[in-house]
Amino acid sequence: QVQLVESGGGLVQAGGSLRLSCAASGSISGISAMAWYRQAPGKQRDLVARIFSRGTTNYADSVKERFTISRDNAKNTVHPQMNSLKPEDTAVYYCNADYIKKGGSVTFSSWGQGTQVTVSS
Image (cartoon, one colour):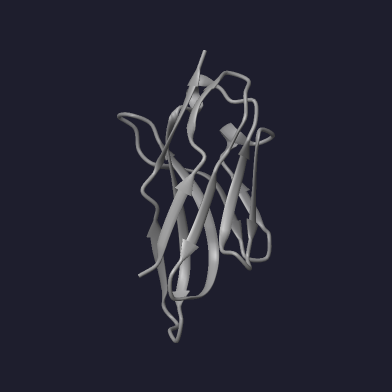
């Protein structure tokens, strides 16, 4: 079983910055994509940023120019740097990884437990 452990959430004032971390552990052959999603109360879970193994990235329009996602393939970690935070960025942030188990060929998807980010105005 692959586990994702998140850290770095918290309370920050508008205009401030936070850096989240997510580490994947377990019987992993490879991770094709690592991503962060967020879910605000009463809303659906939406993609914030995704990074593929070769470095290609996708961002939600609402975070472009403010968030930067990076990953360390050797350590199976992913880090979104979130700058110029706004109150509307307040949500629970979830890490996600698409991976292949050792000895396998099927891609699975795993989620972290979520970390709260609160931006005060």
